[in-house]
Every structure is written in C-alpha cells, then in structure tokens.
Image 1 (cartoon, rainbow over the protein chains, first blue to last red):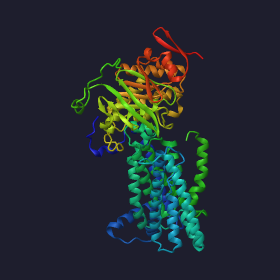
Image 2: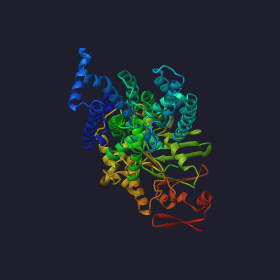
Image 3: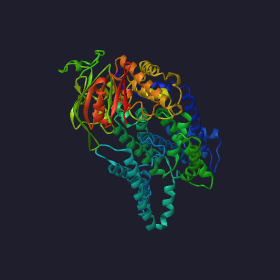
Image 4: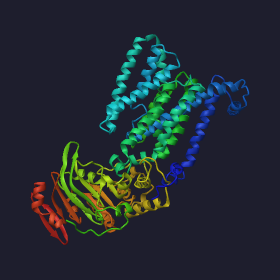
Length: 349
Length: 282
C-alpha cells in the first residue's frame, strides 16, 4: 500500500461508489434543480421577471462588477435585492443539510439535526439579548453567533468524559443546554415584551434582510464547516460499522466526532446567526438524499448540499409569495408532514 | 504452550527485523490486567496465539473474554502487563500498522442497512494509510478492488454484492461482516462470538470459512460460547473470573474437571470419531 501519494489525490472518490453509473446523472439532476431554484427564486416576486431576462440580468450584474457599468431597472432588482437573498438561501440550505447529514452519521441517529447540541437555542438567546437590550442592528447576528458557539462549547464540556465525548452524553447535554437557554430566552422576551414580535420573527427564520454583505459574512463559515465535513466523508462511512470496529480499522473515533461537531457547529452557527432558526431542512434533506441516492457519505453530503440549497430557495419563494410569510414556517409546516410520510413509507430509516 | 503454529510469510518491515526480540508470528498477552470500566475483568492473563492457527477463547459469561479480545486489539488499554504483536509491544506499533495487522469482528457488527454489500466490504480496506486516520491519502486502486473481490469470493458473498444490507438474512449479514474484516488482509482476525444468533448450519459455515482462512495463514482468535463448536478449534483458552483456567488443544482443555470448575456444571466429554462432544449431565 502506498502512503506517499500526493495529497492532491485526497479528494479522489474511492471507486466502489464512483463506479455506480447513476452518480453523475443524479448529480446533474440536482444541479438543474438548484439552477431552476436560483432562476425562479430571483425571477418571481412582486415584479415577475422572465427566466431569460433573469439570466441576462445575472450576466450583466456579473459583468458590471468588472466594468463598473451602472445597472438599470429590473437588473437592480435581480442583482441587488433578489440575488443576495437567493444566494443566502442556497448557502444556508446547503450548510444545514450537510451538517444534518454529518450529525446523523456521527451520532448514528436518524433523528439528529444540526441543532442537536444547542446551536439554535444559543443563537436565539444571543439574538434576543441584542434585540431586548436594543443593541445596534448589526450586532444581532454577532451576538447570536457568539452565543451559539458558546452553547456548543458548554455542551461539549458537559458531555466530556476524560478525553472522550460519548454520543449519548453529547445528545443529553445538548438537550439540557437547549432547554436552559430556551428558558432564559423566554424570560428575556417577557421582560422586553414590546419587542417580542421582532424576536419571534428571528426565531422563525427569515432570509429577507440578506444583502451581499451578509452573504459574504456567512460564506466563510459555510465553506469552512462544510468543506471539513465533506473531506471526512469516508471516515464517517467507516464509523457506521460501530465505534469499536471503526477504531480497529484505524479511524480515531473520538477525534473524528469532535472535529465533526465543531465543523458542523461553526457552519450552522454562521448560518442561523444571519437568517434565524430555519427548522427541518437539516433533518429531512439528508433522509431524502439517502433514500433516493444512497447512504454513503461521499454521496450523501455533497448531494444534500445541492438539494438543501434548492429546497430552501423554493421554500423562501413560497414564503414570499404566500401568507405563510416566513421561510422557517414553510419548512416546518411542509417538512413535518413530509417527514412523517417518509417515516411511514420507509420502515428502515 | 505453543502448538500448531506454522510460520507465516516472512514479510515484516525492516524496523521489525532490527528489533532485538526473536521474530515470532504471534499475538501474545503477557501478565495482562485489563479493566472493563472500573471492574478488573482480565486479571493476569498469559496467552499466545499463532498465525495459521484457529484459537478459541471460551469461558462463562463475565469471564473477561471480550475484554481480553479488545485488549489484544489495542482497543482497551491494559492496567498492567503487555500485548505483543510479532514480538513487539502493541504500544510501539503505530495506529495504522496495528489496524492493518489486526482485524476485529465485533459481537454486534453495526452494518449500515442502506448501504450496498460491496461498499460495506470496501470499508474493510480501512484507514491504515490515511492522513490522521481521517483523510484518504491515495485514490482507490485496482489492488483495493482485487482485495474486496477476493474477500467477497472467499465468503461466498459476491452473488449479492449489489444488494443492500437491509435485504440480507442473519447468516448472510455475518458473512458480509466477515468479508469486511478479511478485506483489509490482516494477519490476525479477532472475532467476538461470531456464531451468536446463527442457526447450526450458519454457525458451522462461519467456522468453515474461518478454517479456510487459517489454512491460508491467518491467525484466528474467536470468542465462542458453544463448546461443541469450540472443540473444532486448534487451540483453546479457557477463562474463568479473568484468569486462565486451562490452555491447550481441545482434548486437554475440554475435560469434565475444567468445565465443572469454570461453569459449575457437570458434563461428560465424549469422543465421536475425531470430534469431542460436550454433554451436560443435568
């Protein structure tokens, strides 16, 4: 066995999966879905813009970045208002789905979602704190981000057992931290009742405030977190054989678990800090991909990113154009029943 | 007590040849003490397992069989004493080296239901040469495919390599798990109750597959509960309360006196052809 192979080959997918004839057609299908989501998500709204014109506007917007040409009429709507919102949807949907898939894999638990270890409740508390104490608007996501990461750190330290992080203890600690923080959030809301509506809007998730600056702020968290998770796909596959077997095969299980938890928390915290807590996407998208395309993480994680990105943009489109008003309501309202249907249909998940 | 060890291939790395201890194709426990949690499950075990030999570890529930097995694999850290692989302490082996030489088949191997058989077996190629054990550092090669093919063939699982694990019967699953363990081309295979939950035919089948591997030079160490299956091993280690009660070929270990001492049950040991049969008296 060679161990001196250049590292550039590290990303080459191992053969037994890549051999499957269906991987590329399916990836292509999901890419089309994502593209259609971007075109429709950008085109539809209070002013409807035809797909052809959307593509033209995207092109002119891109070109104007280099030529400095002024954008006019619908191009401004597409490039400055709708596109950042759509791109944010793709980023957040992809991050939550990849993190959900990785969590389900690392905890070998189909009910795991990216909020398992307290990211959501930490984020909610941070945002509520900033809103109730009337901090500047720009500080809301910062406060949410800091408290989200802090709450995961607390969960990790509560679950720690020597140098190990047993999955059951992690899940239990996550539940406890989540409950305590939610109670604190509720207490804060009751003290600042006049702002309850604003807090509620945040906790339900909303892509509406996203500008290019927000997109660029979320991007590094998403890229870093998801990038690390995608690299760990084969180690996650091996972990599915059980902790002891994975260790006997040379996978440092405790290190893997810690890295996955940290990477997923960074990506999730970055996402929810800017758009609020969007439910269910991170839970159901990996299940959908697993059923349709296979359970190997080398397929599951990248395809979850594509499907999650597309679905969240469509959900946001529905939220904008219907009385459901907020994307978090759409994902939970539609995602919940869908998940139940999936459970009844597939006894094996 | 050394018995039945045909020296395997002399293919150790140069660092091993330089080692002062004489080269031996053995996995050895030297005065091994291991805790399971806080309970001293293994208390001063000396044992020696050879490549090309089918060894079975027997003993009543709680005798420390599984704990011993995990310590031999380096998955449990001993309180004191040492495990030596090829004459070199296990702690001196790197994690990748160790994981290539020693394969483990857990009591309840968690085969992922939604994964195809071939993909499961391919996982057995292991993380031995990965960076940090987490990042594959080389592409999948024809050698890997050949090893997977060979493991599938040797366990007669090739026929359903494209099926999902969820669609398999218990016996088929266990063969897939065995193929997974063999795919890494280990020198020793340590199995924790591989015949559990299997009917007589499947249990014998597993033993037969293991026998073939042993003939090919693999060292097998299996924890077995069924004494009549264990009687088919080359060498037995009888554990009782974390200590070795008897070790040796089946005819010296499977005696009424030893079994009464270990299990507290009166038995007769009959000889049928060249096989031993353990028959409880009660």
